[in-house]
Amino acid sequence: MDEHMDVVHETLRFTREVDQPVDAVWAAYADVDHRTQWSVPSGEQIIYDSADFTVNGQDRYRCGPPGDLSNFGTHCYYFIDSPQRLVYSDTIRREGQLMAVAILTWDFEASDQGTRITVVDQVTSLVGQGMIDGHRNGHDKTLDRLRGWFGR
Image: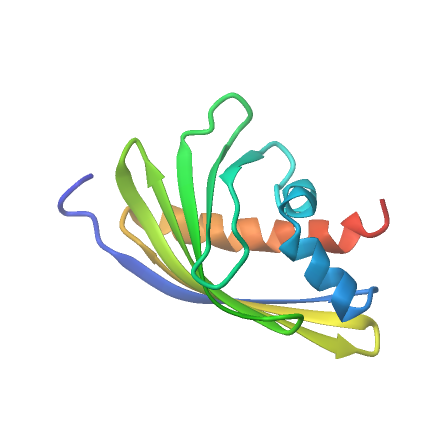
């Protein structure tokens, strides 16, 4: 890593309405097989090497363009209040180098349309603005894909 690279921090907030009840949307997140189907933007791939969606549990995954899963991630779950809220950290490493650390909160609330999902992503990039932009782009696409996944 470039020792002179500035650390970049940002808090990102995303909201989507999903035309499904809260329990169904929560289940789509909680089930890693379902999450794998909707959480990856087009042109990307994710493989969960392990998944433990429990308090103090961890998911270990690899992601990136198909054939180049050089990003290694870990989710550590700190708070799970089914089916309303979860809080977890997400760390991303590439070639052993820590790239970004984030604390995320997902809220699932009943709404007139079904479920309102709010994601707050407090991300610190150790490699510049690109990781912040990646989080922003990734969550935007992921939440859109979740909304569309129910219409599959």
